[in-house]
Amino acid sequence: MVPGSREQQEKCIFCRIARREESNDILFEDKNLVAFRDIHPAASEHILVISKAHIPSLYSLMPNPEDIQLVEDMIAVGTELLSGTPPAERKFGFHYPPFNSYVTAHQLLDRLRKDVKPNAVSM
Ligand SMILES: [Zn+2]
Image (cartoon, rainbow, N blue to C red; front, side):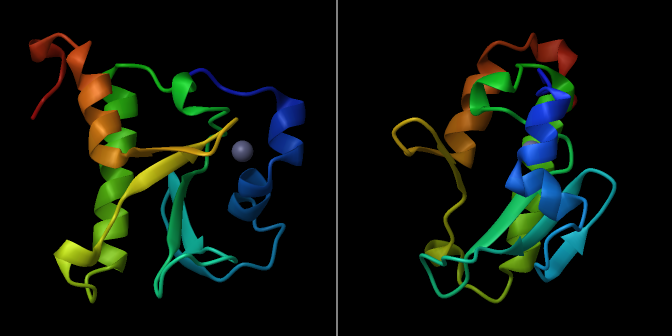
C-alpha cells in the first residue's frame, strides 16, 4: 500500500474515526480495521469497514499478499457483522472519487490477485 501523507491522515474523516476522535459507535475493532455504521445509510444496514492505515485511494492498494489479505479481512469483518442479513442481500464494495465510481470487493480482489505470482499468495 502506498500510504498517504501525515497531513492527509490528520484531516481524513476515516482516520479521525479510527483514532476515535469522532463520536461514531464502533461495531468492531482489531489492530488493522475499524467498523461502524454509515451516517448516511443507503440500506437498512450500511456498515463501513475501514483500514486503520490511511489509504489515499483504491489505486494505493498494491497487488501484494498484504493488501490482498487486508481486503479479504475487510470482507470477513463485513460478512460477520451482516450475519443477520441474507447473503443474497449483502453487497460489499468500495466507492472512490472523483466520480463516486463503485467497484465490488470481489472485483478489486480479482484485480489485485491477477498481478500476483500464484506462489506469492497462500490460499
Ligand atoms: Zn485516512
